[in-house]
Amino acid sequence: MSRFLRLAANTQGRDLAVGDIHGHFGRLVMCLEQAGFDPAVDRLFSVGDLVDRGPYSEAALQWLDRPWFHAVQGNHEALAITYLRGGRLDLQMYRAAGGGWFLDLPRSEQVRFVERFEQLPIAMEVENERGLIGLLHADSPFADWAVLRTWLELDDDPEVREVCQWSRRRLKEGDTQPVHGVRALLVGHTPVLQAKLLGNVWHLDTGGWANGHFSLIDLATLELVSPGQGAGPAPLPTRSA
Ligand SMILES: [Mn+2]
Image (cartoon, rainbow, N blue to C red; front, top):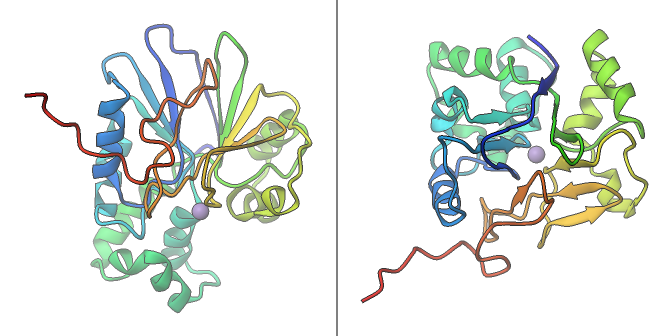
């Protein structure tokens, strides 16, 4: 198990990232189709929270098996791990946050999900010819990416993990201090109406799992490529007559 993952550049196709999915893999597929995503050459990066709230949380394991799909561990994956491995957990809060599908699984199934979630890195970096891109779920506890990388590689500090997976400080304070050592840091966790850039930190959870839309960002251009922005869930493609 590695808490920090490094990935080499994609020399063949595009690298895209998406915010929290929360069990809405059906909507995600529509969004990818509209963006012309090609799984033969393109890759998709998730900032975590694959599960809870939406109808297809159980598809998370199939997605994580796909060679072109890479995810960090969000706080919702962490909740499942905490539930199974033992730890402080408010069960009512967990169920209210969409964890019912997991709580109601047979124990053997819960183990299958948790063993996979435990393998997910807390943070990852992806090489790109235009500069290194970092990804984690909530926020970086350090203003220097190299410090976080070293920390995660050497130590498993619960306080560092906590900020990476749960912090909403940057958005709350509107903190525009950049994270040095990466061209951009991509995060989710706190829903925003439109993808929001603070310093070099992109907040990508635009509520595609609720009444918003999925925001896909291109890791090379740092441009949003998702269709239907601001228009609610992307409409189904219509056949021309
Ligand atoms: Mn979250």
